[in-house]
Length: 307
Image (tube, rainbow, N blue to C red; front, top):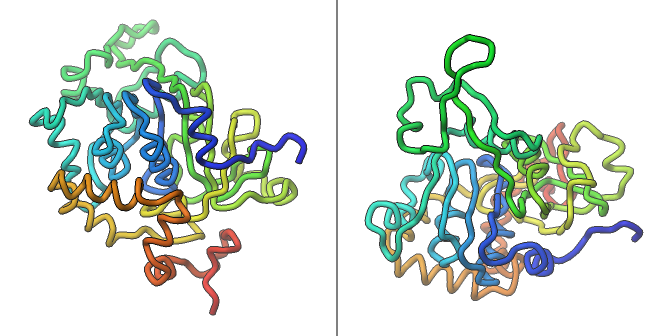
């Protein structure tokens, strides 16, 4: 197909993610690119700076696997399921090694991506007024407003080497459509040197053209398109499958015990060839229980529950 950017996940990670890079893995509670993160683990990438709004289970797993040396993030938590114990071990006890962290508010992270996307030297925001984060993070700075209205806080641009996002669909050229809860996917893509998009399905161009408002990331910003059904599990994809809340609860005791977390990585990631094998290991019954019925907002074809 002319102009096709469709590739495999293994090839996309091999080509675009290398040791020592700054990698943004975005998706705000929804459409988290777990499949891509797991492939990074399979390929044993090292010394990565990972950027995420709300570092969650995926970040914990990347840390357990030894992929990450630095974390740039906001709101360290696993949704409603509890602590991320690998992150806590690294930050609180330097066990098994210290983790360099750079913390922002959600909006502070978003503004960093916005500044990076626009190639601006900084982005102003007011949300740090009354916060102690500027005392903890020297990269959050206060400057005098040029309009004589006092001080305003600013954050520096964030330009990842590669941004990875998951979406409901894209065409082969990379026009990427997502709906439901969105986060910083679009500015994070524009801010990056390279962009990998994993999707529930690759569709014909006329499907995208028939519903253009859903195209948040256009083809010219995308370097690789990978069809990975179920690629956001255990998070969810609106119209396709629900959040696997049971898995989120299961991860808390796993991550509390580092040996158990290492064993999980060995069995579920290194022990599976790809994401399809991971889903097969998960079991058809559990996966079927996450599927959703057709909705007015639309869904990808494979995600519809038969009545």
